[in-house]
Image (cartoon, rainbow, N blue to C red; front, side):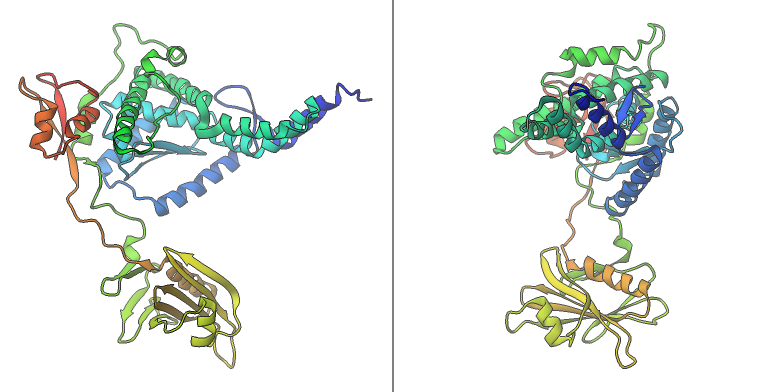
Length: 479
């Protein structure tokens, strides 16, 4: 028989059992999770494919191989060396690094530029590997999905009907941006991996200092511009060297003997990052660009499937696969009177009956699409229209099989107004040796870097907010 006192405990146990409980490979403690390791890897692979198809990848094979080698060395000494880790450089000036479940690690080009040596780069990668080994994304997912279960358990144990809302708030706060506990856990495990791979664990604190300097600069600029500042790492109210809890978790990784200096490998880091783009990359390779058609005169663009061709005829564009067994025709008309896109299809394209009928809303355009059923020996027709101002872009194509229709839909849904690519020359990092007369102010003036140029150089060289180069040391320039 269950007593009143034991019923809540049993129900909580049942809720935990439904959610799933596994031993965390990094912490050695039970996890309240909804995803198996196989599911975690599958989810990570799915996210990775989406990212690779939508995010620009920095095109520098030597730098990519360098980061891959460092990352794999760290992964081997991690708590989950069995995972198939991948390391990817995102071509973005934003200062960020992140991880997807199952061993997929990403670092932005923008963050690499503000690091000073290989140990700091390794610290970034180790921190992200630790998010994977400690299953933080999976635990975050479980916390979000489990908010309802936590709320129910709280209601059962307290008898209060108000606790549910509070539990949701607590759950959200606990996992927002991983939260302080998860970030500290990643710092702790990451420092352990650094030590095992021959790097000084203090590099983890150095990297957080880099992010803290960026935050201080961003706050100052935000005050000047009246904007909301960004937050980097986001869990330290003081400088990381003054954070006692951080110092304690890093110290648990181990201390290298006095006669054994951790690897900084500043020389190879300098060689690999010399010439790296800093700021906007005007030569960025955007995924799908190789199959993108741009009509500069009429100002529109779309992406067509691999191997398809575009023929610009007198009154229409014709997009067809290589064997020409079908084609999608794109025409343009002027809207004389206001009407709905679905009405346009009925009245202008004789599409009275539509299967798979659905509205379109993309890139500031509105429209409609669907399939006209086959009739009198005529194949089904994929039709669509997109409105831009008083222009109507209409599409028609014979659907002979499913791949045809998928190709047609990919063209239609990628159609958008063409935006002129930014014009300019990408700036790159160059290294020079400072002399007694070298100052960041003089370097910024010589490089025409603007009023904030000196501070930007200080940030790039780890000397923010008031440092100056020392004679004989290597200094990053922007040119």
